[in-house]
Image (cartoon, rainbow, N blue to C red; front, side):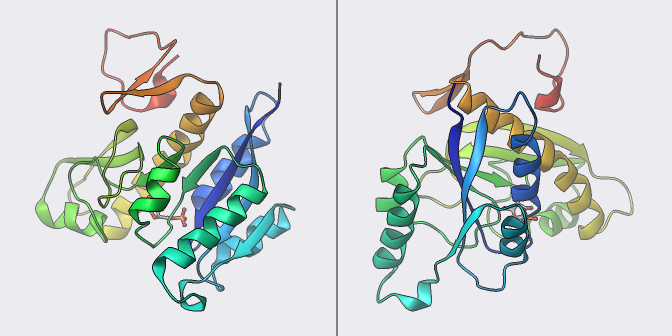
Length: 218
Ligand code: GRF
């Protein structure tokens, strides 16, 4: 069967893109990364993607007259590569309604908190500051509001005494690298759908214990 063609949009180091790539190379993987786009020319992830032999593009908002033109250019580039799923992975740009609606339910994001808690930037620092006992990460379908949309998967990590922002970020990031590829494989396998703005994942065996991370889901 053909693999699902995925585009990854980044702005920086691209560690989630790398985790997605590594997973796509597994023999049982159901997706392939066909394109990586960055809105920043200096994004470290772009060189990494090139070293993997993935097609890349740099599309910068400053090169366009309006936000719509910029987002249309991204859309056009994605369409050239026959992409079926767009993954935001540290893409530092709030995509507008037109793009988000065009890609509705085919556009996902990873966010380093247990949404709907802690939206926006520097959320790991906010979690430490707030003194919450647990945090984690969320993969969700994208809607026009910031860090909004039906949640597909979450992983929980403890916030330990003495943690600073970087301790917590590292603990969360490890989980991000597990759940993001997991979700993309589920989607590629046709197991994920949205109904009444809630996500239904088929063929999940429900366990009689708490699921800490989707890797625990058979
Ligand atoms: C991750 O923490 C992700 O959750 C957030 O931005 C960060 C991107 O990191 N949206 P990387 O570029 O994937 O390493």
